[in-house]
Length: 508
Image (cartoon, rainbow, N blue to C red; front, side, top):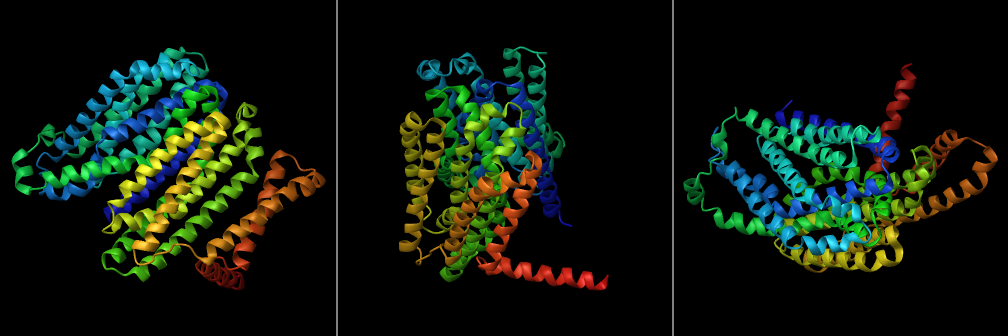
């Protein structure tokens, strides 16, 4: 097995382990040991750190991956990692200056509804720095084909560090001030572990951070690196649109409701899990087809990816939706977070939209029209900010979720039109998607009928009701998808599995 396969499998295992730890921490520790306001505080601080660190990277994350091969020569990297350290440092200095200059205005915005945040605003630059270089060190390790340990540090280590902080504070072994310091320090410890591992890979040669300016001039890549960096700095905002919600909520409705939104968004995030693997597999194929001008293949792949992303994400959202009441009943202090049920649904729909149509973004970025993505990202960012500013006033946390859904709807509508008119008439929509939407409407009605008539008659308990409900409605959903042939691919896979099962039974 090659190193890429081994590292990919181990990295995936780290992801799943992190998800498991995060699930237990979020639903059975955080909800029990922190108030909704304290949950909101940690969410706003982390989201702010993620957003500002993404800007401070100045596109370094993508630049490291793209330009590293030009600097790699045997065991000599010609100081490439030095550049990888310097550019984010310049970005951090810029972000830090902005926060320093506008600190008074920012604190004034949050002082009315979220005074707790202003008490710890001074820790935000430190947290931004930790998150920034945690990402940089992870990316540097990845181009050296070593991703398992950095993944473990980010996905497992950070969660264990923050879990420790939650437990210490929950059992009143530390004060709130100490808890916030420990919470931020967990990211700092993870950053140091990332640095230590990078140095270990390079046999603790500090010379890897010494920039070889002569080699940089010799490659003639300086101009390309600057242009690419500026482009990626702009595009990074598209992936961080959901972060705006918590920042606006903290300012407009306070940290308590932001805490409720935090738990709801964590549930909704499960919807996009399949996207990470299918998207990674399909992108190289689409990129090749776009390069060769095979627009028929692009259209075919686009429809396949879009349909199956839609199917998988809608099925997950449906299973979550029919069990939301049970989930909120099981988690500690669930009554404090049950008000986020509609947020889960709306954010889940935005995840469905994003995963189903993200292939449009890939097609555009791989084409010669990739610069248009900057225009659409600007529209997405400004729309998200404007809608958050308006809808949160009227709808609070539901308004924030609605702002995300509407912003993505406008963004993808523009993208779909662009592909149709400018890129060989590419259209990612198909009859299968219409069928899947119709199936979900019927299954939603079936759930309402089940909870109103069938479930009360059965008299099942909380857990028993959830098991039977999921089995029956999930089975009906599967039967509807297969029976109506929403996806010929899925039907073919099911047909291949059934004969295998029958043959095994015959052998017995």
